[in-house]
Length: 510
Ligand code: FAD
Ligand code: DLZ
Ligand code: SF4
Image (cartoon, rainbow, N blue to C red):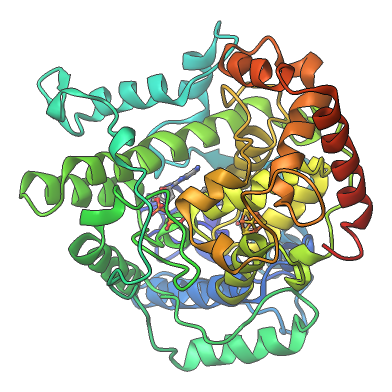
């Protein structure tokens, strides 16, 4: 028998389960650049270029290993435009007995794959994605019977199961979590090692001109393009991070700086999510840096928690709660996303900087996404559908399994508190404490009301006041509501008025 081994764009790992028993002389590996995937949302130009170039490099590596590979480029005149239509075309040209594919990263794609057995009258084997440390089934078992999930407990179990940063049955250093040490603001003068930058080869150059031509109307800057596109380059990026930035990753994990978009973060998510890096190898390398004394525990534990904890946890929530999760809107937020999320044209310097970084790099770090871009969308009552679409478009690491729970669960609290214990709502003072954005802003972070006041200040109180019926019982918000109750009626009326004015103006001039 001969089977079709389909490799999707985010499955670029030589150890992918769909290839484990691939017969080099009979089976055909199939990869396709399809218009449907590249345009179902209008992805950032850099994201498309990164993925197409990485796919093309991966296909060549497979050929070099002796596999039979068929690869459809986007501009192939016979390209049928979608996964389903391309698989149909493949099967017409090559008599095959079976389709083998690894579990995809999006519900939408899973549903398409599940329909193929009937459409093509062939067995379709969907294999577990063993690159992850947990699985949808294991997560569902863990979640059963819990009304509220907490990442921290899930993460501790994985630490124990895989014996990572463990001292026998105790966590290394005695604590599971060193976050209290990981909230230092950063100074402009700080020397920050430059992140990994690759040089484009002929394959990348060809993809860049394809994207320039075919996706001209998409958001984002295509150039300069420095992302790695092969496993060798991704490993070089990982090693550079471990050598030069991991040691201070923890200290400055929450900091933001106008002059530097990258700071001490790893910038590895795009490689991890398309399969060029494996989560366990990143975890092991970081653990090694701790045991060999190269990096301190607060940094190493913080980094490992992001990958072993958050990354696995959000994937579990996604598969447990789809398809309903995409429809959740706990606060019934219905404002449209303001245009400045695309144009960068806003007087709010924090937003302008974070959107500009995103436009330039298809990257912003976690606190920019959470406490500026996401926090504003939460406070301004933007419709979760709009917010999710934006986040799925603009980042090179965005696939729905990881984007949706972070946006709807972590930042918008659209799931009513299933993923997170409270909304990450914050006023301007948080942004001022953790960044230098406020210094160059037209608004005054210290002013609470009026036309010069930082909008985050009154939007914050208005958000809490208008959603009181949904949030007041949350024990973590009790103190904040007591502060609100102590405000006099004039102050409350002022918040109401400022909010009203701001939202009305948001689409014209903000
Ligand atoms: P680092 O700070 O160096 O962290 C190391 C790794 O941990 C990351 O590479 C990533 O794989 C993992 N990680 C960290 N935080 C999370 C998290 N919350 N969820 C899942 N994995 C995490 N991450 C994505 O990969 N794709 C997305 O589409 C995405 N959308 C987000 C949207 C919002 C609103 C928020 C708040 C977060 C989102 N994240 C997303 C999570 C996180 O912001 C990015 O993973 C991180 O910024 C990537 O940069 P880095 O590689 O430098 O991460
Ligand atoms: C994100 C993306 C884009 C832009 N284009 C393609 C593509 O042309 N071919 C492909 O196989 N994958 C692409 N991807 C990634 C897919 O959307 C991703 O593999 C699925 O969403 C996972 O379920
Ligand atoms: Fe952002 Fe407010 Fe600071 Fe301006 S003053 S940068 S709007 S937090």
